[in-house]
Image 1 (spheres, rainbow, N blue to C red):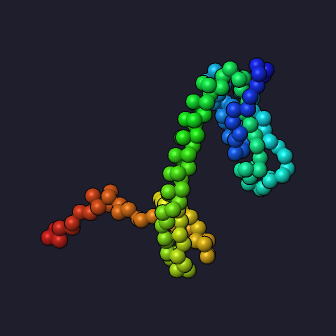
Image 2 (cartoon, helix red, strand yellow; image 1 turned 135 degrees about the vertical axis):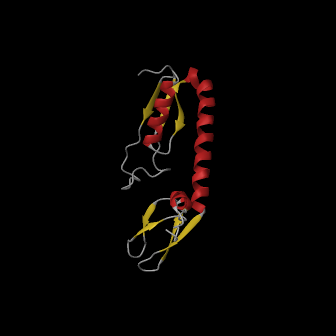
Image 3 (cartoon, rainbow, N blue to C red; image 1 turned 30 degrees about the vertical axis):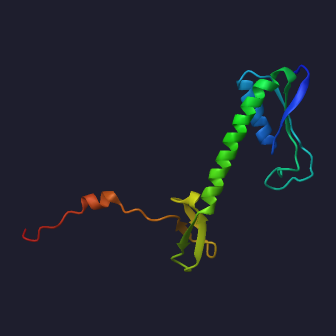
Length: 146
């Protein structure tokens, strides 16, 4: 795809983010090109290390004003989502293992899931057990006179 007077509009934290932004811009009718950073420096088993790789999204200079407002909104949404994730991670749920009696702490975002004990790998229910409301509805007293 050829761009008229190309300019780098965004440096992403990862190749995935750069590709994602390219696709968002193209859906908005903006010609965009993603230049991935595939250097070996900073690669880990989990992928790119943010800050060491510099994948960029390029557009035509004529589109910069319109795209700047889109990118500001994108960054606001991304930052607010990360803030919520960090808030969830700050809250911890402690669970005592029935097998080894070890206390394991889990992020509040894992409430309602099954995780493994950090000591013995027994499955643990994270979060408070909710009372089974259906079971309470079916509790019928037995009439002993019959």
